Structure formats: structure tokens, C-alpha cells
Amino acid sequence: MPRLELWMCVFAGVSGGLAGSLWSGLVTTPWLARSPTTAGIVLPESTARLVAGAVLRAGAGAVLGFLFWLGWGLIAVVGWRWHVIGLLYGGLCWAALVMPVLASLGLRAPNEGRLIAAHALEWLFTCAAIGLACAYAWHRYA
Image 1 (cartoon, rainbow, N blue to C red):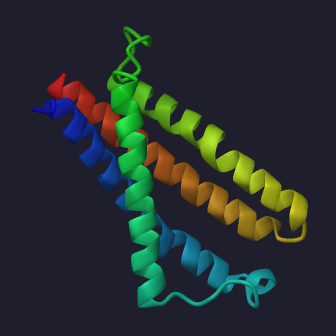
Image 2 (cartoon, rainbow, N blue to C red; image 1 turned 90 degrees about the vertical axis):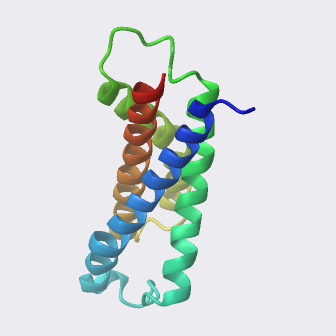
């Protein structure tokens, strides 16, 4: 039978990813809609795009939750509080997964700095939420 910690980390990752969807709808979408430089680039929000974004972030959260469990909750970091470990994990995930993609977009579309910055902030929040949720779940059930 699978361990409870595995499922709790995966579910915590999914909930952190869905928190990123909330950030996207409340912060990123209005910010980009008001920007005159991204008016012709960014598509308006639709139900299909909203659901696809939520599925994307929830899936990313599930994968990152599984990776958190595989790392035994960052067992090498001892004596630190759970929220510090969560922020560390979220920051490492963001730096390893999101930053290369955003950097390559910045190289290919240097005039879209506002768009790239909005998505960088959105995914930083998403990764931090996933990291905090996973660390809290690990702390509660380990």
C-alpha cells in the first residue's frame, strides 16, 4: 500500500498549482490586459484557456509534489522550519524549471519584457505555493 506521505505531497502539489491558477486569474490576466504593449499579443481569457491553465498548473503541482516526496521532504535540510524548506524547494523548482524557459523567451523576444516578467512572477508564486503546501503536508504527516 502506498505511503500516506506520497499522496499528501501529490495532493498538496496539486493544491499549490491551483493557487497559481488563482494568481493567474486575479493578477496576471488583469495586469497584461491593461498593458498597452501586450494588447495584440495576449489572447483574452476564455473558459477553455482558464481550464487548460488550471490543468497545466495542477499537473505541474502533482509532479513537483511527487519530486518533493522522492527527495524525502528535503531531508538533508535539518533543523529548519517547514515554511523555509517549502520556500527553498519552490525557489529551486522555479530556478530549475521556469527560469530557463523564460530566459530563452527573453532572448528570442527581447521587446516583450513586461509579458515575460508577468509570467515569471506568476510561476514564482505557483512554485512557492507548491513548495509551501508540500512542506506543510510533509511536516504534518511525517
